[in-house]
Image: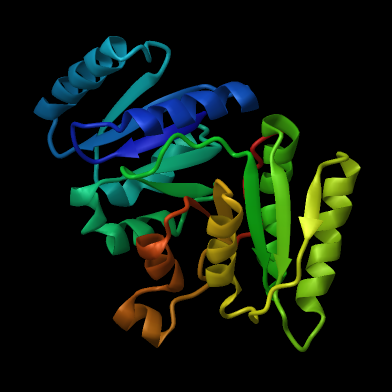
Length: 256
């Protein structure tokens, strides 16, 4: 199941088109998840979304409305056996982006904040920055799924570090991609691991890539608590969709 999480009564048509297309490529079902503050609003949201989907030609998209708090997002994603989460990011929810990122920290699936300014996601080209942290390898299962089922061209961007960890992880990723005979290129970044995500976004803009896959912060340090984690600033400024992968060892796979 691929889920769109919405926090108001409007849904981006481009977001719906993106999710429906991806669900067909990955052979998954898809649906909208909304959380209501009280029981009276559950049926209101159900009727609203069902009618909206029907009128716009998305009758096959399911609707799930829960009387709950957004802090329970990870719990409901597990109940729905979600494998991928799109988070609608409009003018209203943009103001609560930092709080939304906190809700997403317990997710065991990759998630993407989709701005209303984004066009339909095609996944023709995907950029993957590779830093020195061990969990960077977790990105490989998702980028390989995009390569296998979406025909994505993949660019690996290993960080320009003094050590060999980023290069070693890149070699492991290449082994996985080679297993499926996927098309990819490797280009060493000019930046080190602390700035390679930003360079990946710039590279994506330059080559007209559709997506950048980055790892979310493993832990929040003092600067993250005071000013927000790196992903907050990257999402705010990026003109390209960013797929976030939480640094956990038990991530769900998009496919078998």
